[in-house]
Figure 1 (tube, one colour):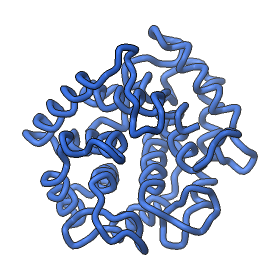
Figure 2 (figure 1 turned 120 degrees about the vertical axis):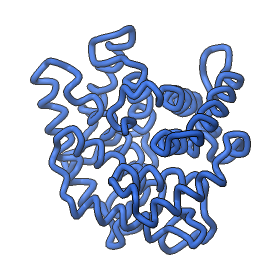
Figure 3 (figure 1 turned 30 degrees about the vertical axis):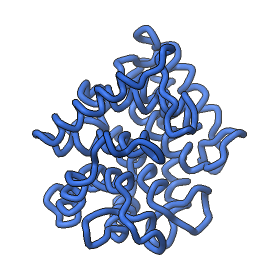
Length: 277
């Protein structure tokens, strides 16, 4: 489900929409797959999913970004019903500390899954779906509580005391999506990211994940930092692209790597509402 959500977003970000554009039929098929794989309790998942909340979050974001692009009322109504139920499942699965974990209803939490849920909720809310204010605020406060004194974001409230560049990039995106542009936590995270995010130094480990959120965050920051960052990551991706058009992507697989590579390169187009300032 995570691969379907990411790949679907990549197609939308390149200007293809349900039924329109060269890959419009692919977008429609991906939406149908997501809609058909929602459990009765609202969880969007497939039989092969391991970390279900990643898939749930990316699928929600994909549907929310696609919502309204198709003129067919019935199609939009199906997406709306799915998103309303998905929001309830996300709310039910939130931990007491305000975050989420790899599996629903676990009571645990960590940063990377939490960021995925926050972006999904924000995208869903932007599409006009009701998202309780308290749900988002608790999640954003969770990310704030993961912030270290150097401004970076660590793995979770409880564990991993070292700041992570990947999670700091995601954290900046969370703060800015929440409109906390002048908040102390946002400014500290932005300064950390300016000092530590360099596409030349992120290779290995969570490279594509880091730059997936890094590109979004740097675009929101703007100015010379964005210009230098994007020139660097763009040239790197073009150089590393394989002959079939794919990227390996953190050794997770070419679907993952190619979807994220395309999403990074498409940020300046601003076709996705979630990428807009």
